[in-house]
Image 1: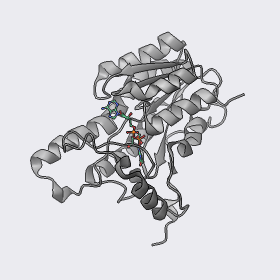
Image 2 (image 1 turned 60 degrees about the horizontal axis):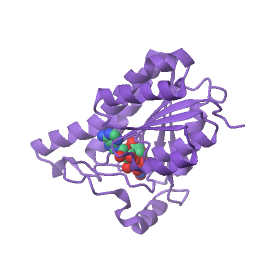
Image 3 (image 1 turned 180 degrees about the vertical axis):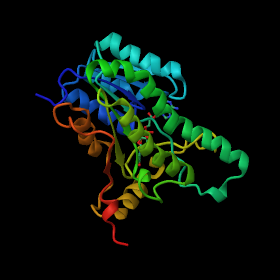
Image 4 (image 1 turned 90 degrees about the vertical axis):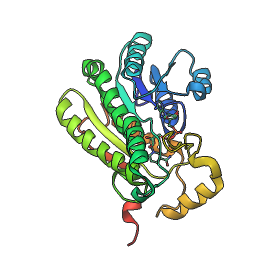
Length: 264
Ligand code: NAD
């Protein structure tokens, strides 16, 4: 018996990386259905094959409110209810400092990073609120080590990931007692997280040099291993489960290899 028997989840950015691993784990924990919104849904095929009839894919952009209506609508229509929203789609700034921008590129990149990484979460929350209040469900948002520390991203990514902590706290207060709202903050993880179109880096990915990435990530954290998407999934299961985290709301749990205990 899994921890999420009969649950239905909606996940943004669930076609790759951390979101895809969470979808797979939710289904393995007994979820009745998972609806996924992603701008590139090609990565979902193997998941749909492994769990026939339990996966729905919506192609769309998280900056578009209509995509979220379609996501929540498909979860409820195809699977009957909604128990958990996972806001997760994101893009990276490859640690660019403020000084590397001029005003125009700063504005465009701000709009893209905050539009996807923060507004995308708010639009998802807005669309999912009614369906989740009917089931006493919960929301989980993917933050980052950059939600808590400097150096995990550049000026825009870190600012957006810090803002997610404030968003989670405020929304948890607003939606209590009917919906719990929490976050998971992964450290550097072996995924193909991409850059922004504003900087012409939409095809650049963290995984472009996977061996180098793995070596750098494992050297950087006290637990000395490069995290895989699967390493974070237990927290997403725990926070989704009414039985196992009924009193948890407004929190961001770090899953970062121990960055906070790194010696000065
Ligand atoms: P990923 O690229 O494997 O997954 C992100 C998914 O989001 C992709 O499938 C992508 O197509 C989708 N996406 C991006 N922009 C979108 C948009 N505008 N509309 C719809 N879908 C969109 O990367 P990942 O590392 O799994 O990233 C997932 C989350 O984890 C992000 O929020 C990221 O910031 C966060 N995170 C990643 C790391 C890391 O090191 N990989 C560390 C901390 C936090």
